[in-house]
Image (tube, rainbow, N blue to C red; front, top):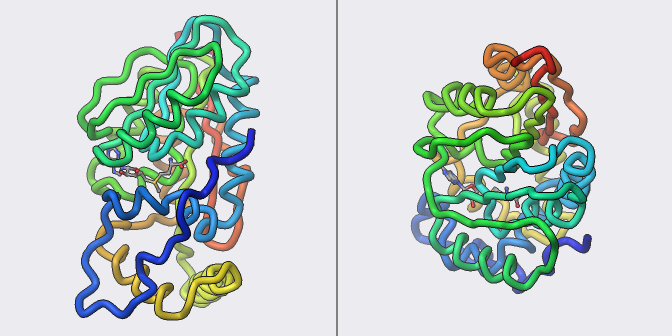
Amino acid sequence: MKPIQPTQRDAVYSQPLEKVSDFTFDAQVVNVFPDMINRSIPGYANIIHTIGRLAERYIQPHTKVYDLGCSLGAATLAVKQHCQQSGVEIIGIDNSQAMVERCQTYVDAYRGDSQVHIICADISDVQLEPCSMVILNFTLQFVDPKLRQKIINSIFAQLLPGGLLVISEKVRHSDPVAEELLVDLHHQFKRDNGYSELEVSQKRAALENVMRIDTPETQERRLHDAGFTTVQNWFRCFNFASWVAIKGESHE
Ligand SMILES: C[S@@+](CC[C@H](N)C(=O)[O-])C[C@H]1O[C@@H](n2cnc3c(N)ncnc32)[C@H](O)[C@@H]1O
């Protein structure tokens, strides 16, 4: 599948701001989101493509799939494109009304066999139903850290045996020297993609209070504590990582 085509070039932080407010997923961000995420997250297109490939392997017929923090539905649509199993229902959830409205227009424009429902809700409030695949693609990092284990636990509880969670997050290295290098390399990646020094620093300030990132060790411990038997990091570039976590077949 082609990634969602950029609608507008991201220039949200291109002009000096008197005060940099906390980042929100509002209408201004929605307009530039595909361009923003592609130029900001190394490997984003590869991660979306791989989520589609994992859907082919792990989705069980007549089950639900959740895309939590679905934004404009890139992962939802990758699943819809690759899923050949019958009777699958894909549910995208996001708590930004602006994202949900735009996402619905993308979903409506895309044909395919699986049903898709896009819902505006907070993922820490929703009660999931039994499902065979859950996607948390760069979403948990925006959720209150105190709620993260509970969310992972409820995903594990609702996954069917053999079900899959894909979780991608920005991470922080516990070694300060390595952390500084990885942050520098990421900022270089953004400059190489056309962002100015001002854009990089204002965006960083905007995200400081809203994106609280964990170490990879914390992520993996959380997954194991929830009960996942197989936890595998399959992607890493600079300070961005993605894991698959599989619920063992013995969990009846
Ligand atoms: C970086 S974007 C995710 C990108 C998206 N998963 C993708 O693959 O293109 C984070 C999204 O999570 C949503 N979000 C953040 N906190 C949330 C919460 N507590 N409940 C639901 N959605 C949330 C934001 O509105 C935003 O759309």
